[in-house]
Each structure stands twice: as structure tokens, then as C-alpha cells.
Amino acid sequence: MGYAFDPAPIPTIAIAGSNDRIPVRRIFCIGRNYAAHAREMGKDPDRDPPFFFLKPADAVVEDGATIPYPPETENFHFEAELVVVIGTGGTNIPEEQSLDHVWGYAVGNDLTRRDLQLKAREQGRPWDLGKGFDRSAPIAPAHPVSAVGHPASGAITLTVNGETKQQADLAELIWSVPEIISILSHSMELMPGDLIMTGTPAGVGPLAPGDTCVVTVEGLGTLTTHIGPRA
Image (cartoon, rainbow, N blue to C red; front, side, top):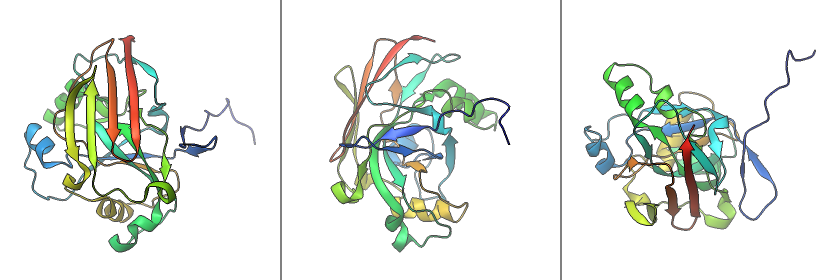
């Protein structure tokens, strides 16, 4: 059997301190997982069942990259996030066993075309074009659990051009990492290489060409993204 055209390269993210790479299978994202961010988005932060959306695997962007300001938006936002790397797949994973399936953690930025997302939300339509566009998932090199453990608390911050825009603690997650993994695994089979972006704190806001955005998660280092001219 041959292919009608060459297959696309496998999307990957770096591993801290290693030349090896992690093949990315899917990128799951949980919406409104910090109470203050839920309120700033006009929603109730109570623990209603969580909801998820996806980004394509090839949306990943390396640390330090310059990405063009994306098309069809006038309101391009940053969102600092803790990223979970699944290393062992499974279905119907009990919450108390969820962390056994984690390979490691990374720092991420859920870039968002906010105007397209909000328009879709108002019309009851999917968020795909607001969330899953090209180069919408900058992710820093991942750290294995053997090196960093399972961060359940610690500062998560984001700056734009040196000015702090987001500042919170991982302990403020409405749905914890073990809960998120268990819930997702009851909907579909998780597989090695799946990434989970765990939600963003309050303070989301716009980026402009020329900006430098830095996300920091305590114990995991930083992720730097430069915004270039409009695509």
C-alpha cells in the first residue's frame, strides 16, 4: 500500500534535558477550570460537570518561537496553563489511579481567537476556529514525573512584555488533575502522547504584534512566545 501523498510529520514536544521527543497524539483542553476565570467569562464557577474541547496535535509550538498574529481576529488572547502528558493509556480510570497514567508535566499557553470563540458561543456553535487554529498551542519542554513529581500546588503566572497579567496557584483548580484524567477516560480511551491543558486563571487578555509572552509554572520553568506581524 502506498499513500496518495506524503504523510505529515508527527507533531512532537521537547523533553527537558533530553534529545528525545514526545509524540503528540491529541490535545485536550478543559474550559473554565479556575473560579475567577469562570466569573470573568460571565459564568458560574460552581462544580458543574466539566467540559472539554480539543486542539489539533500539529498546533504545538516550541518554546522561544515567534508566531505570526493569526488571521481573522482582532482579539487574540493568552491563557497560561499547566499541561499534563499522558504516558500510559486507559479507559474508565479510577481517580485514585489517574496519576499512574501521567508521564510528566509542561508549561503551556492556550492561545485563543477570543472574538471568534465568543461569537461561536453566542450562536451555540463549536469553538474550533477560536481555539484550534494553527500554532495555537505553545508548549515548553516536558518534565518527567521522576524529576518533578505531581504538582498539585505552586504559582502559575503570565507576563506580557514584563508586566504580570495572570497570577494564581495550581491549588485553585476547580477540577484537579486526577479528576480530569478520570473523567476524560470515561468518555474515550486515553493514549500515550495525549496532552491535557488544565485550564487558565483569571486575567486573560490581548496580545499584539511585537509582544513577548512568558508563562511560568513553579517547578516547571518558563515558556516564552513572541508575537510577530499579522499572518
